[in-house]
Length: 229
Ligand SMILES: Nc1ncnc2c1ncn2[C@@H]1O[C@H](COP(=O)(O)OP(=O)(O)OP(=O)(O)O)[C@@H](O)[C@H]1O
Ligand SMILES: [Mg+2]
Image (tube, protein in one colour):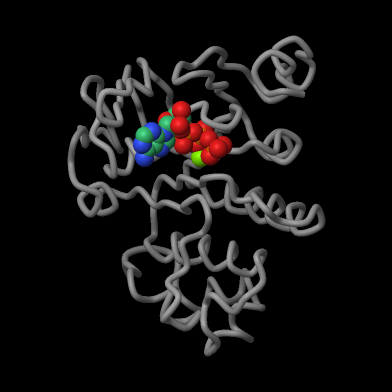
């Protein structure tokens, strides 16, 4: 579904991603782990087309999408739940959900409301008046309505209370059952390991490990060196 092959991404002269390669298959949930500044967001931004890798390639469902603009990459089937949720302040909950929707798949507004009943109850309120957890649900619902084949999620647990993180983790686990390929960038190792099949560990813009979730759980040295556990 998604193949990232040896991408190098820069901010000006700053060489941040140094040959990142990863793969996510259909129905697979892959975690992208790493400390603050490891390059998780830069990797997702390079996939969705906000940043253009200077070398390497991004392939989505067999199509080379390297260097294409974000709308083309979204059109090829990649959805993003951005870090910090990015809810549009002037819009209501419902408007946040529907304004970018692509009616070309299983996800409809009513199905998103079924998954997140609280969004339906609050659909006429401003998106930014919701709690942090509800805004995260809104960001996830908005991405689902683009009916992506590949869903990128950037630290959905960030800033949320433990009980809410557990809810979000449960929902991500349910989404996996729907057959989407999911790439989940996280600093919350426990949450990521509770849902992931495989993990890539990023450090200073390089993949330093690729492992199953169960081997990472047992690898104290790897967790200590690169994840600050
Ligand atoms: N707009 C930018 N301009 C210049 N450097 C940047 C920019 N955004 C990020 N960086 C740098 O790129 C590196 C990778 O940052 P990135 O945001 O990808 O990390 P991250 O793994 O997502 O971290 P976090 O967990 O804090 O979100 C860091 O050294 C960061 O300082
Ligand atoms: Mg980030």
